[in-house]
Length: 169
Image 1 (cartoon, rainbow, N blue to C red):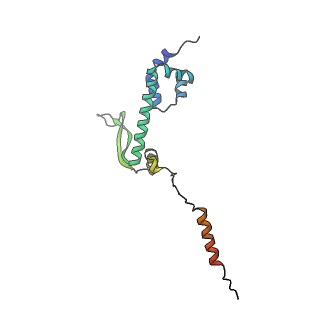
Image 2 (image 1 turned 180 degrees about the vertical axis):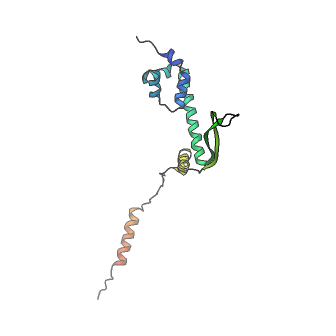
Image 3 (image 1 turned 120 degrees about the vertical axis):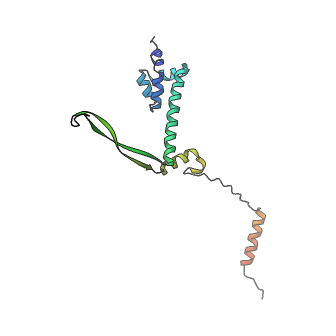
């Protein structure tokens, strides 16, 4: 019988959570842990700590993506900072370079406009009934069929109207 790898997996639960947060799928996590996907499924059933590590990581990743998507629907501003490596001169002779430092040389505030594609995606998922592409319209039509006698009577009347009069001489 094979020896369980659970003790090694158990010591990596924080890593499992981080891998989920990074967007890895369960097959990749199983590979990283050195176990098969069926073993991973078995561990999920048997060990609540493993199942909750997977769940926490996935939920956190989903929330981060939701927040980023929502931010794109609204538009936002950010500062773009340019830094340059500048020399540090000796304080006595002002010619000898004693080191370098990164100094902010420029700061520009940029604006990202609201993204219509993100808005549509958000609305199609959050307000499905109002924003889906295909709307189902249900219409009930009631057709009343007159009785057969009434139809025959109407036809007789029509024939009589269209029939020329016969005159006896």
